[in-house]
Length: 458
Image 1: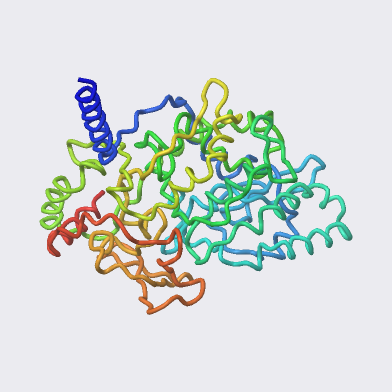
Image 2: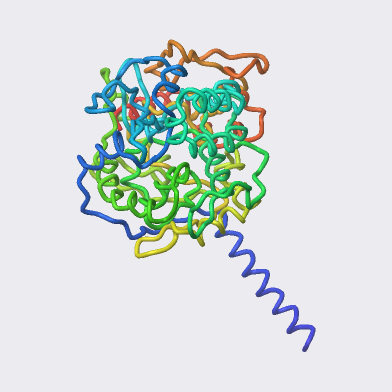
């Protein structure tokens, strides 16, 4: 009887584990979190483009020596009038004017001569190891100490932090983002409770720089979680404030920035994707709509009279795209713990981190303009997203005079036989793989073209 009882118990356990394993193979819905509402979108816009949420920077004379006078694409008043869109002027406590990077460094892009706020910047070059180097920062420091000591005192903390983070912020190729890396470095040097800067890292910083592609802001209004792996839960204003770790002095300063978050969120929710600018084949798009709803909508949602977005996390075993973004969070849990016990996770509108082995299936609004694709920017066109057999292992696009392919939806690119410098995307590098999302492979070429035509209408 004891033996039979043990066998029966093992059978129950086996069935339970089988059921649990089966659940791991299914998409997981993300429940909505409590968000702050009622903000003023116009105030949020003005704060994003001209606010002092990054509260330190470099003196304007040093800034001009480094970047000159690039074109001004964003019309702003006062001290920001002559600055490029991705920098803002702030006034230090001693009265000196400093130039600081703002959110549009990553969350705006010039596309065919027009600036689109909210479009992820896929042209940033973090592969340049010379411009933002410790050596150059030290030269600028020495110059200011000698000739403009007042300006140096105003910018001293920015130089200290920049010299600390600069050695970590490099990618192997141009066009990908280092947001995850920057967050890890800043967390390692900040007290989680007071947010005060610590000269020595309190956690071991991961060696690998994992690239990401910046998603468009206009998708945020549909999502119940932030970031590609959906680990950003709770108040999205607090999650957006992570960039504030660059210069924040303490929690009182963070609280001042936090007061603006309802306005900022109101503005982000107001952003609409730009419409496809050319004629669409209505007959082909109608066919594509049917195919899309039958094959893609279960994960990415519908965009017709039955519109909905399901907010699903797709397990790695299903999506099969490069896993390093989500797996790194399991490899370095101390950074997750830092956030979940930090100021950002406290108070009456906290945020938190929840891990998952997979990625969000994002909304596809305005997808035509958001190339390159996948969370690491490894696929140049939607055509290649839907047909894995034509994805190039090594490819490049023209960063100086970019050309867009309005039929294939993505960047016109050159295919290479092997890696060749920092302008060629190398999918054989860790974190840069273009594997996964094979769902379009089962479709015919004609069906894929129809779906692409429909995607132009989203």
